[in-house]
Amino acid sequence: MTQTAMALSTDAKTQIAEALNQSVAETAVTTMLAQNFHWNVKGMAFAPLHELFQQIYEDHFVAQDDLAERIRAIDAHAEGMLAGMLKRSKVDEHDGHASDKDMIKMMLDAQETLAATLAGCGALAAEHGDTLTEDLCIARGQTHEKFAWFLRSHLR
Ligand SMILES: [Fe+2]
Image (cartoon, rainbow, N blue to C red; front, top):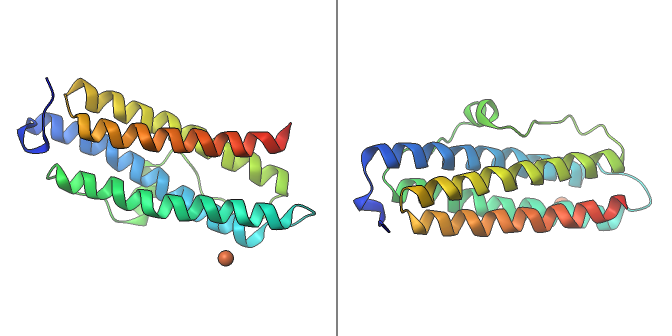
């Protein structure tokens, strides 16, 4: 049965918030990774890659806010500490010393990880009838798969 935020059980809210916090953490770590690569990328494809990494971090910066605000809308706590996010995230930081091709590969991995995390978060929300969280997660998962396609297309 479809539930609105306030009709969700405490257990459902806790589980959904945990999955959303995972999504926020990975989105935030990937935001910084994309800005890092935007700054440090080198090579003949500098201009389009500098631009693509900017497109990614601008998208992700807005998305992390949308996801965190959905956590608050279901009346749970949004993790706001970088240390906590790094601990949760399956996407790792990087020092930014890498070739353009390795940056593309790392960002592709990050986008695929995020797509999987968001798909899982959407499925969990659906299990609890939380259609509105499910919808947000589906939209975010689709965006990560679009960026994954953009990045993968550079490697073929
Ligand atoms: Fe810039």
